[in-house]
Image (tube, rainbow, N blue to C red; front, side):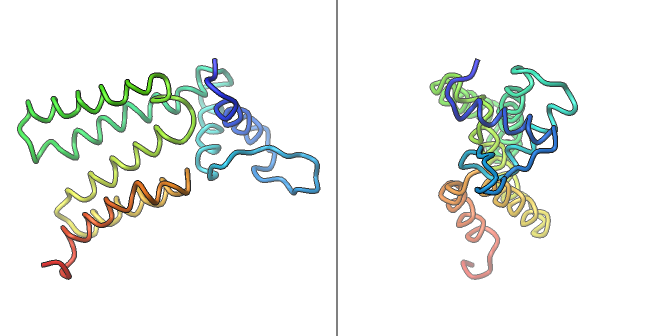
Length: 171
């Protein structure tokens, strides 16, 4: 079951991509579908359908795996800074906050995947190698903004933190 029309639209567009339909058809073609998301979200749906088959469960799996991976990446992003016990408490706290949003935490829309890329960007900031750090930050920023343009607002504080930690301008 899908929570709203946008969630089912994401699943359907991913399925149409699997059947070689255009992601963004011409407005004069009469085939109008889509949602206010970038192509990565629909391509992820397509790839999951190709690998695991066509079902509602598979369409939900994108969000579920993204949520799980975001917790794993967030754990590695904070584990060096805090001791083991505090790190687990922080991850448990984040999980409790996530669960307040019920099934929105793992739906197939862009938010769980954006959380994954936010975690990747935070993990990148923690790296000592400046090149590796910037690559992870760039991947996280690029994919998050591709998923939803408003992700710029989520990623901007991470970018500023990265500048403060890595840039010679602030030292």
